[in-house]
Image (tube, rainbow, N blue to C red):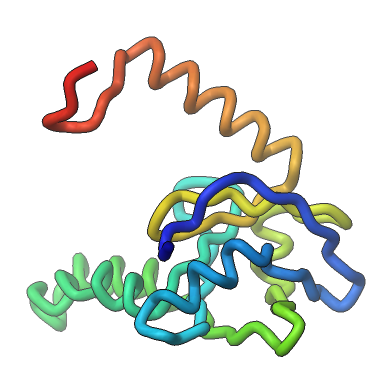
Length: 151
């Protein structure tokens, strides 16, 4: 399976290392056989987004349709690439989170990995719980369902 499912908690050591959950490592290997991740600070939330390389490339592809010298191109390119980095988990499945991203997400000793299907996010535990609860409430209030799926 190549989807990131579930919510998992792990420890962040003082050097910024954390183990990617085993289920997420297995899903990552199913993305064209690679294990590289693009990390970026979310531009919407106080968390870190983790994108398999092929999924990130597909996300960024429409950027090529914009005028290379336009402000729209530059703003979107900066949001996608400016603070992003490529990382590879070590043989034990650990990654080093950049300090700027740790700070952006307000991470401490414990972090939460939240699966979102094609990507996953890394959150501070209380912020993850608050986001999850708010998302559930918004979805219920608005009666959200997937397009083409009967309720």
